[in-house]
Amino acid sequence: MDVKTLLLQQWASCLDEEDWFPPLEKVLEDITFEQAIWKPADGPMNSIWELVCHLLFNEKRFLMRFLGETANEPKAENNESTFRLPTETLENWKKTKQEYFYVHRELGKILAKSEHEDLYRQIPGEDHSLVLELKSLAMHDAYHIGQIVFLNKMQGAWAGKRGF
Image (spheres, rainbow, N blue to C red):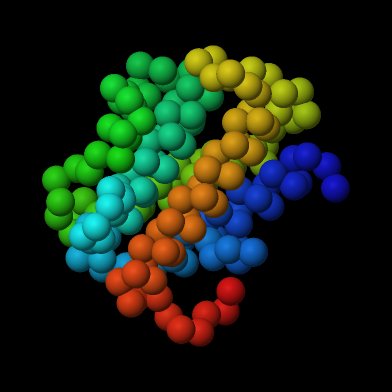
């Protein structure tokens, strides 16, 4: 299997294809607004929505850099500020999810269309090539998907029996 095919599979498993962990689109499917903003009372933890905002920030920034649209890339003072929520409304929760799904799919399309030399071209503003950055983003997504599932389980909202 070539690197591109492997990375495409890894990228898809983070969004909409079941693998060793549930894909984010499926995980977020039934999460209500109240569940999305909930945080445990003890300890500093991010909410589900904050985690999705963080994932969106990183993927959108990378997409803008890849497209050469650095003026439009999201900005943050530090990592903590990438978890910041927009105004907490049901509509904004839905928009955040949809934007994340859109950006993730756009990056998947870029990967799918890339030729071998494109995979290894360094992206302006990044330390590595497309293939290494997307590999890292996929691993980052998987890590935070686990946190989202855990938060959902803490709320008692995770289905007892699932297909994955």
